[in-house]
Amino acid sequence: MTSFSTNIKSILTRRLVFVVGLIMLVTLASSACAVQESNTYPVEIFSEMHYSQSFRMQEPPRLAPPADSVVFKSAGDSSQTYNVPDKQERAYDPAVAGNLYRVNCSVCHGVSGLGDGKAVRHITSSSSFYATNEGTPYKAPPNLVDSAANRLNQREVMFSFISGWNGPVMPEFGKLLTEEDIRDIVNYIFDDTTGLSQ
Image 1: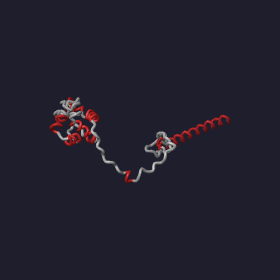
Image 2: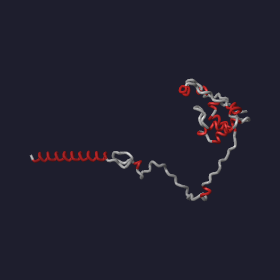
Image 3: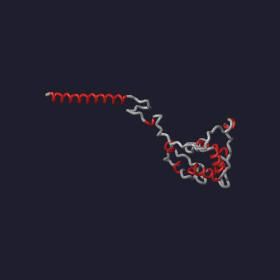
């Protein structure tokens, strides 16, 4: 009988230790999950390594400087460092200006500037977005050769027209291109040797 009771005690002791251990494990796990780490959002048990200051896997590999390099100290006194040179006017190049015109203007105004670009049928369509909202289709893009000869016959007027807001279809190129690029396009429109007005 002693051996039987010792056996029972041993089994009960093991079960009790197991149950107590299981309760402690569950309590420990639930408290660890409820504790918020010091990161930007709750993390279950461990801090995420990529937020740790000591973990550098997120940084690209660093290149060692050349062996004979020296530390940069100065490029002169502050009066020379902060001087920004005046804007330089660039010389008109018909090839560059023609490419600027082709990329930015020819889709509406046509390759030769006659107002017959590939987008005209969409702009003037009665089912376009503008026509649907306004009730009438938008007018066709103007003939730039005719405009340069008659209506916008001064380069500064043409420059202002291209740079500013000109209705819902033509973009404000002053926000899209540099002043030099717009001046090149204007010169290309007025150019009577290699440009549109030839």
